[in-house]
Image (cartoon, rainbow, N blue to C red; front, side):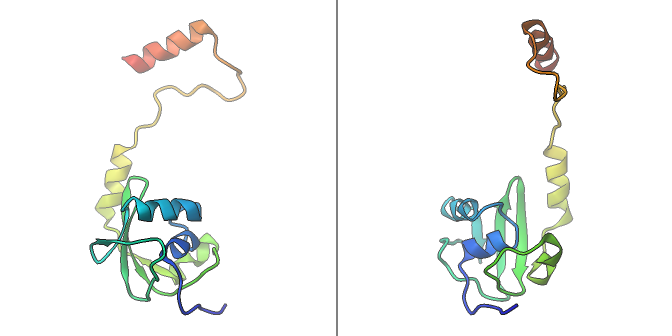
Length: 127
């Protein structure tokens, strides 16, 4: 695989699987969720090897270092060749603590709940 000379940051973030689509990576850049050196970056900014990027992905502020450039999306097993994850373990622990699974799961395949079932569900979740 040949490494390119320059890659846009939105394309790189998508290629290393930090965002599910390139448009989501672009939106994150526009919203100020991607920072290099403490400064917000535009999606057209070029990424350089060795830079540290802080990106908000979901509820986690991911801190990563660029090891290599790429333009095409790669498999999840190949991602560690292109980035080094510097995110503190506390950040992942905080995200796990904040996650609250639904109180009641309506089984798939049961169809639409009746009015009586819906009121029972709302009664359990409303408490």
